[in-house]
Length: 239
Length: 239
DNA sequence: CGTGCTATTGAACCAGGTCAAACATAGTGG
DNA sequence: CCACTATGTTTGACCTGGTTCAATAGCACG
Image (tube, rainbow over the protein chains, first blue to last red):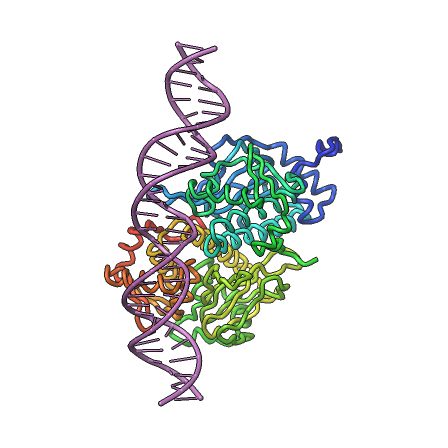
């Protein structure tokens, strides 16, 4: 067996980084994963990886780029349900003949690979289970944000969540990460208008809580901000 | 084998009614279910069926009564994440050593039974998978409501959702159902204040969209209201 | 009858929305 | 190299849906 590509590089790809952090994967698991990653395909910005109501062929593992689950109301109002990051899996359902419960759209150029049944080795199953549980936890957090937090709190809380998730797959620094979205997208994720998001970001910048410039978000003091908005790390397994 | 209790009655219990509507259950499945239901226990109003962050022992099937998943912020703000109705399953995780991602609290007296591993027969697995997918779909709907709908739309949309769910387990009439909650609970579910919920309910009543009196909610014309708020039935499987 | 919810109403207030214009910035094609 | 277009950010003035606070009323229950 050849040494997988990621072993020859200094950096482990985000998707592998994340999955191995969810459950211990052995050599077999990693080999399957490497094979799956061979089948990666690119998705252009604004294109859909999955469409609500349509039948799901197979789950997909995101390898790079940002995507989001989205729902559009009849009059055009748009709500992003969650962000989809490298290492995330979409379209994983356990029932027969599943249809997608939401549309997933690429926010940047995205690379993703299908996960066929044969990819689901032992260690993998556990990793996907944990991943699914985390997905749910993030949906719950999103509900609490939209329902009961102020605009400023929502933004701070989301940024901390993204920082947490991007840290898990090696895409974040100690106190910053690339944030390749527009203020309008952030607004549609937080149930706000772009104008108000802009103003709140300025407020956050003035108070030194959040700096966002040139596509990079900086949280000067993540721990302090987390304390301030009452956020605790998301956990779904014991130990 | 004795005839299960529900066969001797004219009405099928809501939990069984719902589960059989999610996937065909054979005699074996139903026998297991009947056995599980023997182990039912009661939970008093305001008591918790499950606590966020605590390890989950086994999943529980709700047999009667209303519950809700809830999150409380540090300063006391409360957000209900979803309603839990008879036939719903809570605490079903696929990973090892799972911890609950949210607290589930009884809104009325609740009867629930644990689902031990032995309960998970063949047909059951599919039913639980569909149930899980529906749960997720309802969380997504909740996000869209909170993020992008007006107070009136949120209430109408939620009532239609509840009507849909209660119809599935036989607890709703053609155009009405029992709604055993307070306006304050509804407010905390919709990210509003009780005062505003009260006013919007009056508006809905005046316009003839929604009538709520004596713990019973009536939707004079469900189809028309659904059209009005742009709601389509929640589906997660083909066919 | 008091005590404790829950529902209802009124009045003042404000977080966030709306509308519209200005200002970047980056392609892109001539 | 310069319009020209397109997309994103920023700002100002004004507006409104929903909140807040406080008081009243209805009702079940011990």
